[in-house]
Length: 166
Image 1 (cartoon, rainbow, N blue to C red):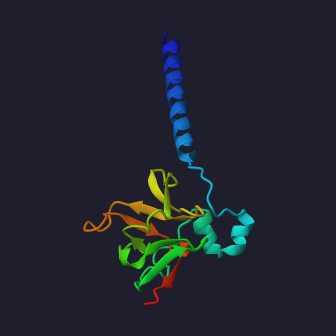
Image 2 (image 1 turned 120 degrees about the vertical axis):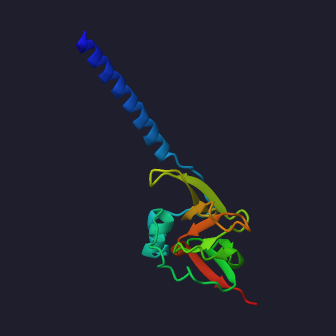
Image 3 (image 1 turned 90 degrees about the vertical axis):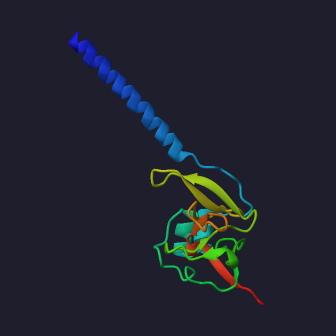
């Protein structure tokens, strides 16, 4: 009788464990698949981007905090995707978050796509260029309360800056 109870307990433990692992694996692999206007092969992206830009934009990497020259840039202008030149952010919506990455409280309308990223084991809202699908960073709800309350935490390597002409 003890053997039967032991076998039943082991069976239940293994069956529960297996289901939990399957669910976690499936959830972490869920990724929105979308066809973007600008689409290139991996070799074309590698040719067109710097090593850091490719790491961030195409491999969803993260640059070191405080390493981007755009972090403390507050000149008037437009921040665009470094991969496809799509305007993404206006300088008037940039703020110093103290995190070490360029931060904005909103994007230019219809320029950004979002997805869910599970890379660190928890769900985060990933920001992607709406034209090429390049990884930009993540959005958090700890931005300026007087505006949108959002913080678009963006890798500087994913951006180019064009100053205003006026």
